[in-house]
Image 1 (cartoon, helix red, strand yellow):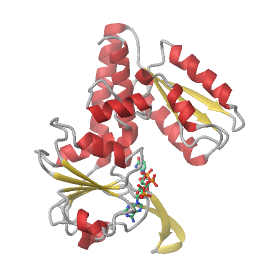
Image 2 (tube, protein in one colour):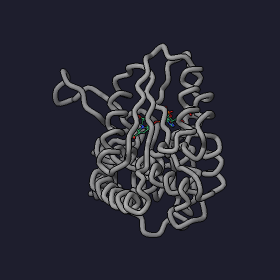
Image 3 (cartoon, protein in one colour):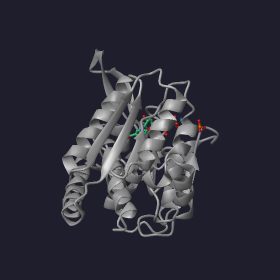
Image 4 (cartoon, helix red, strand yellow):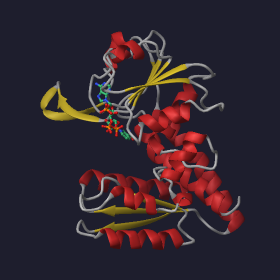
Length: 295
Ligand code: NAP
C-alpha cells in the first residue's frame, strides 16, 4: 500500500519557514514583501482562490493588496493598473487571476507584468528562464509544488524516468522543463504524454515518477503504473459522489484506489498538490522581494 503524501503538512512546514524568513527580513530592512492580486469579474472559483491567497499572505507576514475590478473593466484600464503596480515599490509580486473575461487578451496582460514581479511565472521571460535553467526566475506555482513533493519522496532523482501526462502551459510543459534541468532538484529523464499518444499506458508504465495533469478522472488506472512508482495527481475534478448521488466530491485524474495498491507513494485529492500551489506563490513573492532588494 502506498504512502499517502501529505501536501497539507508539507505546505504548513514551508509556510512556517517562509514566515520566519519574512519576519527576519522585516527586522533587517524595515520592509515587508508585498503581493498584489488582481481579479476581474465575479467568477466564484476565482473569488475563492483570491481570498485564499490573501489569507496565505496574512499567515506569513506578506502584505496583500487586492484589486477587485468589475467584469466590464476594459483591457486599457487593466493595463494601466498593471503599469502602476509595476512601478509601486511596496509591490514585489503581481498576480492576475485567470481566466480573464473574454474581451481581455490574456497574453497582452501577462506580457505587461514586469518579469521581476511575475510571481506566477507565466511571463515569456520567466518561461524562457525556466527552459534555460536560470536560477533568477519564478517557476510556476503548481509544477513548483509538484517538484517539492517529488523531492520529499525520491532521495536521488538523477536519471529517474519522470513521465508527465498533460502538456498545458501552466502544469505539464513547465514541469517537464523544470525536471529535465541538471540540478539536484531535477536531473530526470522526462517524457511528456498528451492526447496524440496512441497508448499513454506504454509510457506511464515506464515511470519511476508519474505526474498526471490531464483534467479527466481515471486517466490513469492501476494497471498503467509500475510497482513502486511515486505518483503525483494534479487533477481536480468535481464528480457525483457514488455514496450519495445528490452530492458531489472532488477527485483527481488518477484512480486512487487502484493506483495506491501499486505505487510506493501517492498524493490524495484533495490534500496533495493543491495546498502547495499557494505556498509556492508565497515562496516566489519572498524570492521577488529578495531579488528586488539585493538580499
Ligand atoms: P489542460 O489545460 O486542460 O491540459 C490538459 C492536458 O492533458 C492537455 O495537454 C491534454 O492533451 C492532456 N490530456 C487530457 N486527457 C488526456 C488523455 N486521456 N491522455 C493523454 N493526455 C491527456 O489542464 P491543466 O490546466 O494542465 O490542468 C490539469 C488538471 O490539473 C485539471 O484537473 C486542473 O483542475 C488541475 N489543476 C490543479 C491545480 C492545483 O493547484 N491543484 C492547478 C492547476 C491545474 P492535449 O494537449 O493533446 O489536449
